[in-house]
Image (cartoon, rainbow, N blue to C red; front, side, top):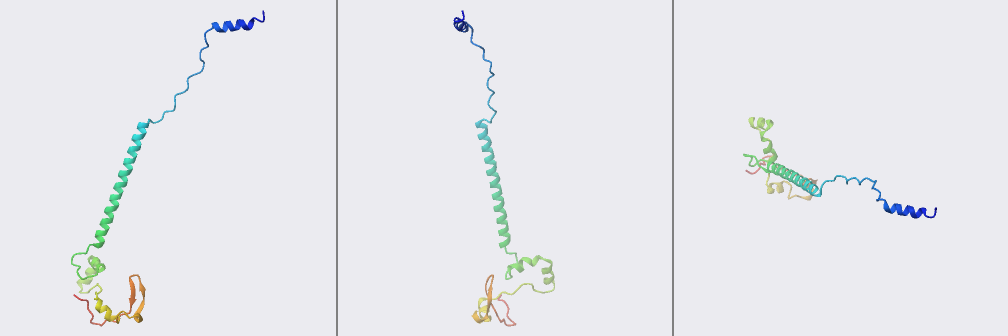
Length: 148
């Protein structure tokens, strides 16, 4: 009877219903942002960065323009004065000098007056080179006055 045991087990197994699944379903995938939400948020971030950069660029441009206008604007009533002297004319020291009839600006000379004072910009009178060009020794007459 033993040789028939495997055959009987096979028939018995064919008659039984299949075993129930004993494994759990796999867990759902991790929750990620939907592509549509990710695209929308990146668009918002990009727009915000471009807006901020534009505002900063306009502010920088405005500051540069304000500095340039201030630097190159001539004060009223400063005709014939050096820009540095005219710019300082509102200070207390300038007011003191004006009150006492003193002048605080350096005179301006014509090119012809400078050429005569340096003997035609003679190389023997050249003292050296400065930040704004060559420096010459000049002998100005005592009564030398700037042109009106």
